[in-house]
Each structure stands twice: as C-alpha cells, then as structure tokens.
Length: 562
Image (cartoon, rainbow, N blue to C red; front, side):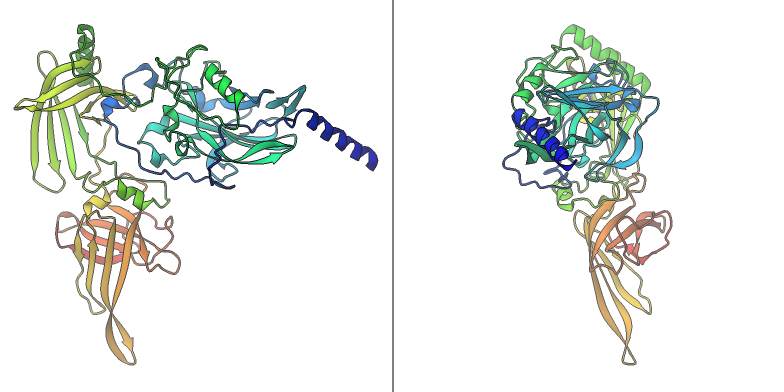
C-alpha cells in the first residue's frame, strides 16, 4: 500500500513538470515590483501624502454626467446583493461573474487573511475553478471578500472625501491543488459599472518552478503613483452580472501576468460599456476649461439647469471640514494631518443664496466668523457661460472679482459648486473642528488648596498643548508644592461629526492603563468653548466613552484669550 501511494505522488509530480512548471497558478495577478521591500503580513495601507484638493468644476466625480448616476446602465443596488466569483483560464486570465443566490448572503463583521475588515461569504466547492493544460482544478475552501467603500490596500485618507463611496473591492482566499490563493482582485465602480485593477504584487515565492504572489500593495504606491481609478478601466459589468474584459487588458495581462500594471494608454475617447469600448477613465484628471462662450445650445442647457437647481434649493451653507480627518477610532498620522495646513479653515460659515433675475440667477454670498459679529457680503452675476455645466460669474461691484460656478452632483443631487467648492443641499453645520476652536489658546484654572497655576497652552494649529500645574503633596510631615507638566498631541477627532467640541489627545508621560485623554470644550458664562476639561485618568484610544457627560473629566480651566 505504501509503495502504491509513493508511486501515485511520483506520477503527480511528473505531470506537473510535464506542464512546464505551470500546473495551475492563478495567483499571477497584477504586478511584481522587483524594487519593493514589502514582506509578508498586513500591507502598509497608509497614504504617502494627502490628496490634492480639486475644484468642483474640475472634479470628474461631481460633473452632471451619466456615469455619475447610480442608475446608469442599471441600478447600483444590484451590487448590494450580488455575490462575486472568480475562475481562471489556462493562460491565467481571470473570469469574473456577479450572481444572485437566495441561499447565501454577504456576512457582516468579517476580516480577510490580513485582518482587514470585510464582508464575506463561503464559496461552494466546484463553483470556482482554474484551468491548467487539460486539467481543471476546483478552488476549494473558498472565502470571497467584499470591501464596500474601502480600498483594503490604501487608506481612505488618501482619497478626497466621498470618492470611495461608489466603489466595491473584492478578494478571494482558497485552495487550488497545492496552491493557496490569497488575492486582491478588482475594484468595481457601482455607478459607471467599470472595473479597475487596484493591487500590485510586491513579493512572490516559487512553487514547482513558478513564482506565486504572496504580498500586495496599492497601485498608488507603484508605477505612476496615481489613484487606481485614474488608469484606464480593464472592463465593465453587464446588467446580468457578467464581466467583460477589454482587449488591452487581456493582451497585456496574458503576455506578462507577474509584471502587469494598469496603464493610461492615451485613448482619444472615454471608455464605454461595450466589448469594443476600451478607452480612458471617466475619473482621470480634467484640464481647466476654456473661458470662451459656449455654443448657444449649451448656454441654454446651463440656464435651464441652474434655474431648476434654484427652484429645488434656493440657498446653501458651507463650512470647510477638510481638516476633520477620521479613521474610525484609530490614531491618525499627525504629520500627515499637519501637512494639510488645515488650521483655521473651518472658522468661516458661508451662505449662498440665489437671487431672481430675468435670465440667470445672481448668487449672494455671506461669510460669518465663528463666535464673532464680523460679516461680509458680496453678490455675483453671470458674465460668460463657457459650457453646458460651467459659467464665469463676476462681482456686481467689482468686475475684477470673478468666480467659476459649475453644475455638479453631490450625494446624487443636482447642485452647484462655487469657485471650486461643492455645495451640499443636505449640509449640516456643527461649528469649527476642535483644533480650530483652540488655535493658540490659553486656558487657566482657579487655584485651590491642592492645586494652583493650572494652565493649558495650545500651539498655533491647535494640534498640541502642554498642561502644567502645581500640586500640593506631603513630604516628611511637611506640605510642599511640585510642578507637573504633560505634553499632549492630537491622536484623533471624535468619530461623530456632531461632536466637534471634543477630541482625543495622546499624553506624555502616559498613564498606567493608557496614554490617551479626551479633551472637551464647554459653554461658560454664556460663551461657547470657554471652559476646557480633560480626562483625569488616561486610557486606551478607543476606551474614552463619549463627551455627552463630564464623567471622568477634570482639570477645569477658563479661556484667557480668544
């Protein structure tokens, strides 16, 4: 019996060798970076820099184009229930499909093999397969993962807010013969229905003479270092759930699967959802538009659409919350936050109101300072309509003061952008972010019998402060005073947008059970943000409760300057 078993293993080995060392290796995917220093384990998802701000009139995600409609081609809601499967041809080209199955659903609260949060479902043996020569191998013990609105290889902090909401990302973890498949596969834009490559292979191991990928990183860290959605789409999803791959992808991937990288091929036209529709991404960077008048037809389209928006939303409000950087309850990269120069951006509240005119509405702009009586007002009128969704407006009292007004979509609602700022009809104002409320501020506490000279001193951008005080203590039957000094740096904003009056800071020296404290601003003597409190006991970054009560807070002090 033992001899027969050994003979069987030898025959299997000879068959693998006879296949030229390519006895099924579907893990050829995306690109291997020969210069990468990545190793096995969880990929580094931190962005190398913050995304550059893009004026709304130059933001392809906000233009009123059909691909920005979740119902383009078919409803994006189909992706909520569709399961996803992947198989592989003998030339290593993947076969993707989306499908319904009443017996299975996406399961919440899972995590992939790198412990990255994901939804998942369990595949059925034989449902996914891989071809190798004359042999077809089932992918067994399969888990399929979905990451809705989150790139598992690149933090959302690396993208402008809202851009990831429309994307789903998919991966698999299973076994095919002797190969273990742990692959990050594709990103699907549920609006346009285009699919994109989002992962780069950064490490491999050799199995039976074949290089097998073992680690991935985001394409943003390789090649041209562009966002994955700026490269040409590699295919699209049809209404029946089948996936069509474009010829450029099939040719380039099959020719060199371990060095494949998504490309910008310089196509003259945007990609279209048909088998011969390969082209550039609708989300590539836009060139600034002309200042020349648009055609009469496009001018009429602009007039009709801006008046429709005016009838739906007569006015808007806006406060710049770009500095509100959150990653759940995780600590943010403070150096990355500081590089954004966000200090003071959220102080001003802007109000935009349409004013009725004979043809195209004027726009009145009012700017108010937080906790101040300062207010400025300007009114702008149309000067030149330059396209069907863009116009140049000028100040009614200063013709040299011009702005761009564009027709855009925000949360799938038709609205406008004013000089690059998108106006959300559903905007809610919660006041400035915490750091802006404490820019360069000094707070002093009242002296007591056990503590005196309590002072909070914040830095110019509000991201750090020192807490100093003198405390009374007993030493050899004699009471003395000693100075205590703590240095704090911003660890994270509160994960609730409504609570901009509080944030979590990391203290040095730390405490026994943690290094983090909650800092809270309260009303005092009828003035907002005049009283400050902080945690009396330091804890873990995720274990500080909410700011709804003062439980656990102390070291009260009152603002000295504002």
